[in-house]
Length: 336
Image (cartoon, rainbow, N blue to C red; front, side, top):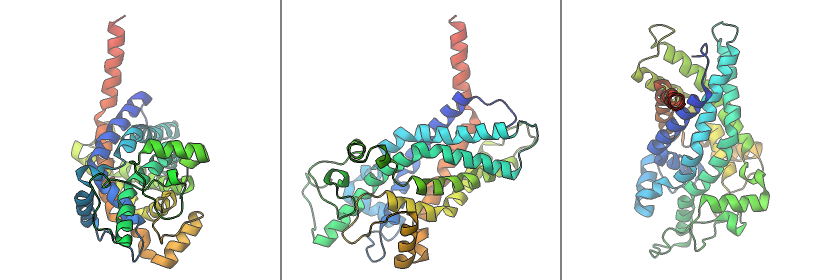
């Protein structure tokens, strides 16, 4: 692929389609990951992935599992498009000498892709995490105050930290539903653009190593299924190569993802501490919760990333975007 002239519009289309399909399929597990990573030792509301999913459905309904999905689906298209297209772009230019890409150059391409994607990833994750974690915070508050039930009209009330300005204190219930638009507008009003980019350093710390691991690993696994350099690997081989590479990279950077999730959570439970930065967050987690806390949600992350990138690579290599671009060019030519 790196030796051929790439079509950027086609790669953007492929990335967008893959992102939408993938996120729709795995979002409930992603929500579970966020809630498991945010709960502290001694304050566990959820015991496992399935316990979290079951309690979420019982307390918030089926659509409760898709809290934050709207912002994710809105921004995942440019996010995945940038990530996949940037990797192809860097691979293309790093192989201009006509030689086969070395492992170091493949890692450089992945590093460039991971760096580019945080432009979209950071605000997307920032908004998504607030919505995903709202149910856990509500459950913590109910457990702490001894409330056994809420009326139907108050059942889905969420803590909105940005509206109460309570960024690092206990949640405050308000009489309206929380939305990504509310959070974004309040953050922009009170903190400016930097408010949406809270946790940028931690996002880079997660996404750059992820891409450095994922793209070279996928590329080399995928080559094993190619009968010749000019042919594509079989459908299932590309899918499983994406799954294996994605889950491996996801587990490898999970400690960084835990730190990012904690730093980007604006609202805290009554006894949950705040963090001043990456080092402070890592130190407090290590001291108060132990090394195993850095692996919280790793199973969920593997279950999310594996099919997400498996689907992404299948769509990418099927060339849906190329077909769309060719059809558009053909239609433009025939209409002249």
